[in-house]
Length: 99
Image (cartoon, rainbow, N blue to C red; front, side, top):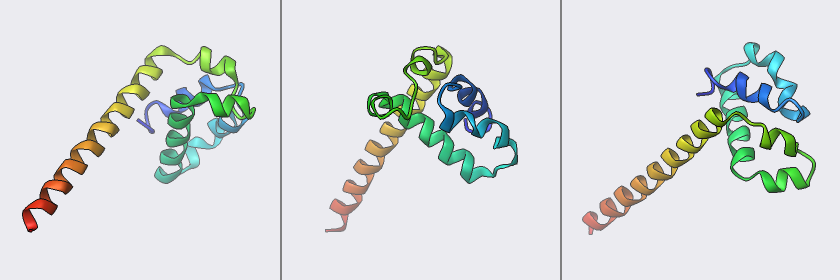
C-alpha cells in the first residue's frame, strides 16, 4: 500500500504542509520512510479530530480525501484489528496449553 497509493494520499493532503512536502522526495526514500509516512497518514485519517484542532491537519483535506483511498485505509485498519485479535487468541491458547 505504501508503494502504490502513498503518493496519491499525500497529494490529496495538499493543504497539510507536513504531508505535502514529502510528495517530491518520496521517490528517493526507502521502505522505512514509506512505512512511517503511511502510518502517519493512517493515524491522521483514523482520528482526525486532534490533528485538526492542533492545526496539524486541514479540515478541508479530510472532507476532500478520495473515498476509494479512505476505503482502503479502513480495510487496512480492520485487517490490523483482526490480526491483533487473532494473535492475542493464539498467544492465550499457547499459554494455556503450557500449563
